[in-house]
Amino acid sequence: MSPPSFMGRREDPRFLTGQGRYSSDWSMPGALHAAFRRAEIAHGRIVSIDVAAALQCAGVRGVFTGDAFANTFGTIVPAINYAGRGGASVRVPDRPILARDRVRFLGEEIAVVLADTATQALDAAEQIQVIYESLPAVIGAEAALAPQAC
Image (cartoon, rainbow, N blue to C red; front, top):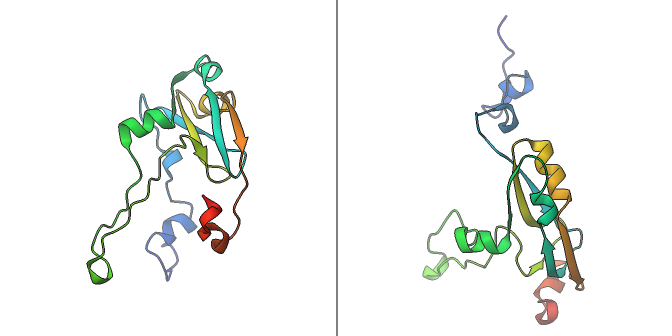
């Protein structure tokens, strides 16, 4: 029996019929699993990050914070870099891969744990202790554009 005919995206038939594969379906020998420690507040200065307990967890191969990533990988850059209207160049804001000095939104990535299994990575990420100095959150586009928003 042939699968039903679908209109739409070319990947729809395999996902709608249970034939799709996701990144978690792949298992490669020696692959590590990552889990992120995320911010619990919407805006704040990072006072300290303590990863000592996470490093002691079973299966953990490494724990990295924003400074380590910034020195190695820099910032997230736009995928498209062509001239805009009137020849204007693309503005590239500093958008760190992991938060460094402060968090700017709830759930922002602060640290990443690499471990032998996904469960070990998640367990270790929960052990990372972060102390914040809470700052006022800015809500809405107009408020974010105000001079005092930074």
